[in-house]
Every structure is written in structure tokens, then in C-alpha cells.
Length: 367
Image (cartoon, rainbow, N blue to C red; front, side):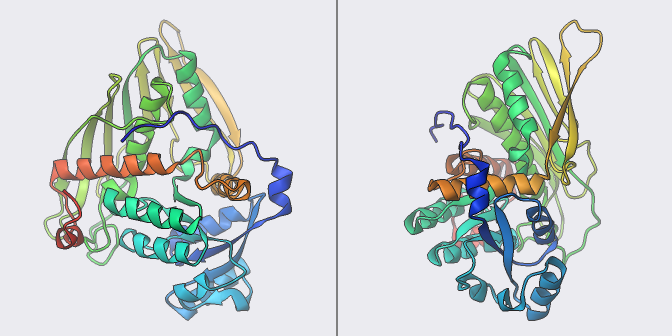
């Protein structure tokens, strides 16, 4: 996949976006849907107006918690997509249902922010973006960490040469839960395991850093290898590690898991120093300050770089709304090519550890 030239963020006045708030509907009412709904309350350019669930009772509970009026409380996803007051939907179903509901939302003319990973695999992602293009709607994978200003700072430090020539990235996102056959985290049918649930962040960050080192928004790896432990009952990855090699000489070591606690940090090593990112993913959900630590070669102590920002999910929602109001078909900070490249890399990581979901075997859509 050819990597595009760097795309600037959209320079749309915040006042213009605020004057025409994007009206959001949330499709599915799980935990992450509530997190997004809470973050949306701090957004400058959008507001939550509707919710849809497979259960009327679940929709009503969610609506009461987030002050959605009864007329926009839907007991089915189809009803939500038919709601004329909804401009955009946030899809937070389990991974295997993303492709179906992205296609249906696009057909209904709704702009779409879909939880990561966008699809189970790269072929699904291709179909989903094709559906969005046909319908003329914006589709974005919800990697909210990309909208925190610390990402722009990391890229800036690399571009300025603060680390010298970047050689190695270490990125980890992992946690431990006990095995529960009915949990989506452990379910083969739900696309469970660490790689798709949170390992996707580590791969995304590594591709971003490798791209910054090449003066591009991202790079795709030329080689992916890995090892992992699969659960004996469900077959999903309990924990896994991978190595990504990029064409510009950058190597990334990525690690993940749903059954193993690890240190969830990012380290970027160069010939002139190294950078520690202690909170790369979600610790600044409510806004506030984060710190990066720059270890310059020869310095006696690291340099602390403090970055202030608003609530994480509000930053994501505002960037999405700016793209919609600007009339463009993708969000520059999280482009279609970036998402598809990430899915392809995840497919290769899973292949390296022998993880293939039963639904993929049936559909014969993963090589």
C-alpha cells in the first residue's frame, strides 16, 4: 500500500463548527458507548441526541443517564439509523458487527465514527470504506489517542531531530482479566484476544513513529513476525509480542494481552536520545496534563515536557465534526489509508502466531 504525503489538519474556525453542532446517535450501549457519550458532553461542535440498542430497556437506561429525549430512544439499530435528527453515528458494537452496521449506517446517509478495530481484518476494512465512499459520508476508525496534542508533540520532536535518527520503537498495551467464556474479550465469535482489542494501538503508534521518521504521516511495515499464546478453549490470543520492520530502518517491538499485565508505555530510541511516553493511550480521558520525558544523549537528567489538553473523546469528536463540516470524506489525523494499513499489519501479526477466527475460515477472506 502506497503511503500518502503528509496531510495537514483542517483549519476550520471553531466558531463555525460550534454554530452548527453535529447531532450524534450512539449505536449500542456497552461500556465504551457510555465513555464516548460522557466525553461528547465536553465537545465544542457536537451533541448527543439519540441512542439505539437491541433492547428497549437498555436504550431507556442509557437515555436516562445521558439525558436523551424519549422520542430519540430506539429499541433497534435500524430505528436509530432512520432517525432524521441524527447526522452521525458512533458504532460501539463488538468487532464482528462493525462491517454490517457501517454499511447500513452509510446507506442511511449517516457519517460514521466506528470503534477500533474498524473490522476484523483488512478485507472487511476495504469493503467498509468503499460503502462510505459510495454514500458520500465520512467514516473514521475511533483511535481517540491520535487526537491528543502529545501525538503532535512526538511527531514534532522526531521531525526536529531531537532523537537523532530513530531506530527502535517499543509500544505495549496489555491488561489481565480472568478467562470467562461468555466475555467478548475471550470469545472467538466476538473477535476476542489482545491483538485486536488493544494491540492495535501499539501497531498504530509504531506505524505513526516510523512514518514521522520518514517525514510521512505513517509507514506500513515490510515485515511482521511474532509469537503468542492462544487460549486452549477459545483459541484467541492471551498475550502476544510482535516485531515490525519498516523500509526506513525503524524496528518496532509491540506487545499486548488480555491475560497478562504489562507496562503500558511507549519508548522511542534514536541515535541522539530517547523518548518515554508514560501515558500513550487513555489515562488523560478527562483532560488535564500529561508528561513526556526526553532523554538527550549526554544529558544528566531527562527533560520533562508537559502537555495540557481537554477531554480525550471530545477532541476526537471535534476533529470528526470539523471534517464533516468542511465537506471532506475523511479525517486527516486518522485517514482511510492509515486504518487499512493498520488492519493489514494486524492480519500479519495474527498470522504469525496462528490466530485466525472461525468466521474468517468460513468466509475464506483472510489469506
